Image 1: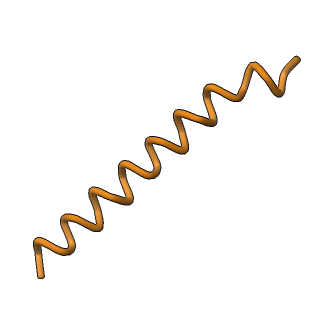
Image 2: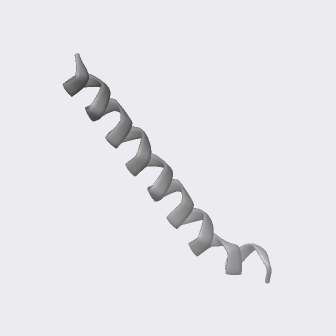
Length: 32
């Protein structure tokens, strides 16, 4: 059970990092 919880937390964290990365990359496009 702790392994599944750790995997889910790691997946959610990586998903947030990817979303934040794309958001920062798209900022200059929206500000044009």
